[in-house]
Image (cartoon, rainbow, N blue to C red):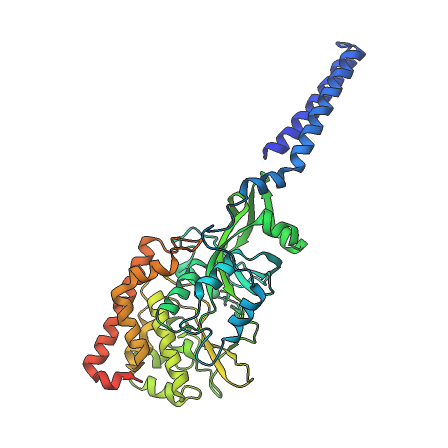
Length: 422
Ligand SMILES: Nc1ncnc2c1ncn2[C@@H]1O[C@H](COP(=O)(O)OP(=O)(O)OP(=O)(O)O)[C@@H](O)[C@H]1O
Ligand SMILES: [Mn+2]
């Protein structure tokens, strides 16, 4: 029971006791009056303190919400968001020389003006509108870092892996994942006053300082309560693309990128093709749009990142460019990364096809030699820092090394000029 509920009951009992004593003639009118006045004063003080509880939490948290006082919050937000959105083209979502630091600090500290609950799929998520109009997909960190609720994180996902995926996507020069960073949000200071009844109904305020909600991870029976101390919620914040997002389903077949995956083996007609048969890659390449180089090598890039992150959930996803025609390949959905089991088949597009873009090939080897320092540089100022626990980071290092060994194998068997494509 909360302290306040306790106080309320104690005061009611005190009142009853005073009245009982008066009835028994133990006290006179004067004593009764004094005691009643004293009790009423106590109730008034209690009511005031209860009323100001939200404010008092708010006050103690002031100054702690902004992640890093060193990073100034950008002022010209509407222009900043507009510039960012105008940079999307067929090559990706932002250019190599883009000022990510500035955008990330804007995502971390811009005022939240609207919050919507997105239909809960695998992950509890809010769609936030930040000052200047940019929408952000916010997924709170629920499970403790490194804890696996279910095999391969199906069910309750890990939003810190979205932040990791963005860093790796960036370090490999793909630049096709929507910009993602950690953000800390205060329920009391930033959400409460703008939240709809639907959102407030989900959240429970306990002891008026901790905010909790109950959630059943879709694949598990158990309902868990997740609590945020002082209402401070950390999570991943991803730029929302105001576009139609589509998943690639090649025409006249149910054959798609997922067909390489161990998890989709059961659902597709090509299940036997996955068992390392040589013909699989040429079959894949003969199916539009994978007959087109740009599409095929995007699949290889996806396999690179999925292998490094041991992620089972990615699909070939794209948006349409400003001209209404061009396909812009993007990468999303990494909350199920770092499956604790080795999933060799995630690397099938690499070791079966043995064909990769020169830029990806070089970036993979470069990253292998500098992963620790580069990842640290990308994430050191993140509010969710350290983004990965040491054992998960070691898994990342291991997976990257294995990926390099696939490429070594390809080069040894097919020769560099047949593996690396310009
Ligand atoms: N940055 C984004 N911009 C626009 N739409 C997005 C973005 N990220 C995700 N979406 C849309 O929201 C859907 C759900 O997002 P996401 O896959 O990240 O959530 P999830 O809870 O992990 O769901 P899933 O069950 O598919 O794993 C996506 O399929 C996509 O259509
Ligand atoms: Mn997901």
